[in-house]
Image (cartoon, rainbow, N blue to C red):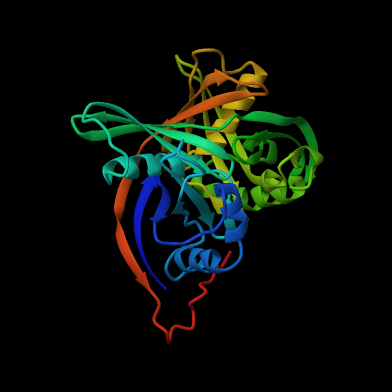
Length: 327
């Protein structure tokens, strides 16, 4: 129980990188299933929960790739388990891979970091100027709408919800539909209704995919419409994922899901860019990079920054080795 970590944040959302946790499986998707029990899950709780983390901590265990086509794999984790996708984490991993020398990069130009994640193979396209990383583009798996205009009765009234896959399934709706706005002062209420909608929609037939490992609703995206910029729609969102965790960033895979939905609605045209703000005011930009068989390939642009490195150790006398959560 000794772990060296490197911590980054992407648009305010933490990402704790760990390279020394062993996992088993032929693919990253298989490794995720095996990691849900045993030593990797013990390590997740130890590093994520209090007193070494907190209820909104996020991170990843670096794994071997599925094959030689990727640079490495990753198991994403949060306070409740292991997720299938993470765009902000992919952006952080792209910057980390280049800054650490794991993936070679030019002083000027771009480096493509290819990463196997449980939902498929993604890329972090790292842009460099004068030897410094200046932005990272997250190129996601195919994203698509799985259900439109699903009626739902909530504690805040009747609403209509869209279900969209962006590496994980999100339920998305306007915050105004539940009498709220995406503002820090509404955070507790946003968490409560986000959890309620997530669990109400989790077993919806449209959220049960052919690969059951990707099934179920991962989170709820509540959106404020801020009109349009010269290049496309402008929105602010909060993503409440897992069981009440709040994404400080605009959510990378959630932004990909919003790109897919807006494109399907005809609200994000060819060449247009979604300006996507978070509850803390940080920003991603999303666009359709490619039209796919059933949806689109989204690209989400952001930036990650190194926070520091740590060594976490367990005192054998510590009664809180398993960590705890107050949420």
